[in-house]
Each structure stands twice: as C-alpha cells, then as structure tokens.
Length: 167
Image (cartoon, rainbow, N blue to C red; front, side, top):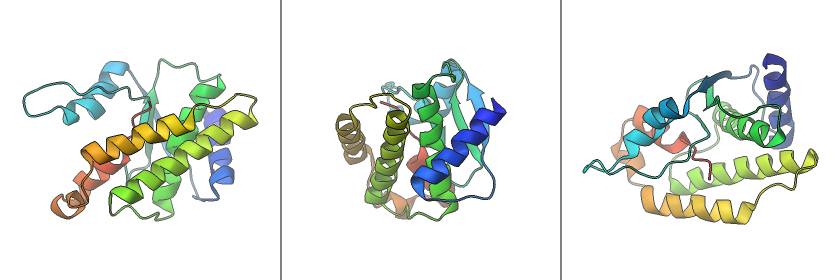
C-alpha cells in the first residue's frame, strides 16, 4: 500500500499543480471510528445524529489523511478518495486561502474536480460532479457561516473546514 499511496501523492500533485516536499501519513479507520471522529461532533445539541457518510478526511494543519479501511484500495474509485484527501493536504501546504465559507467551497470543488479527472484518466466514467458539488454547496450554506471563522479559535476552524463528507 505504501508504494500505491506514494504514486497517488505524485498523481495528486501533477493534477492539482500543487507541491509538497513529503507526502502526508495515511491512516485507515473503521466506520465506527470515522463516525466518532467526524460525525458525532456534528450532532445537534439535542443529540440528534447528523447524516454522515464520510469516506475520509484531512484535518487542516496536520500531516494525516484518514480513510475508511473497509474499501478495496485496488479499485480506482477507492483510490480517488485518497487522491481527493491528498489534494486537501496539498492545498494546506501551499497556503490555499481558507478564511470563509466560499474558500471552503472552492477547496472542495478543486478536490472533486481532481478526483473526477483521476477517475476519467483511469477509464472510469467519473461521478455526477454537478450533483455532488451542489450537495457540498448546500451543506456549506446550511452549516457554514463566515463569522465562524472569527469566533472560533484556530484549531476549531481547522477542524471544521477540512472535514470532508463523501457524498
């Protein structure tokens, strides 16, 4: 898996035009652990669970990409998830702006575009990108407020804006 991950890192750099000297670390987790890390913090104050189909995430400021361990990473769709998260790592290392909700959306849009390009290059038909980006934008509109970036401390903002929900 290490050689595949390194190859995906180089592919993400090539497709994004972004560079990092070293690749991030990769961690595989169970669905339960992913839910606890990503989705539980999003539950509303009354304890109502938020629908959350998370396949992976990169936490801004870290050197760690986390993905579900249940996927078959010999397939291009699963590899494309890793490419998507590596793009977020590269965005971070290249100081891509992340000061408001529009920046957050633009970063997701770039990552999805590169994920889709990776799939198409490898003979897959990609995925309905417009539908996914529409869902990401609706999620941003529902959950993201520019003033959050002023109210929260730096670590909370980092955690919020880089959690990726695969749709």
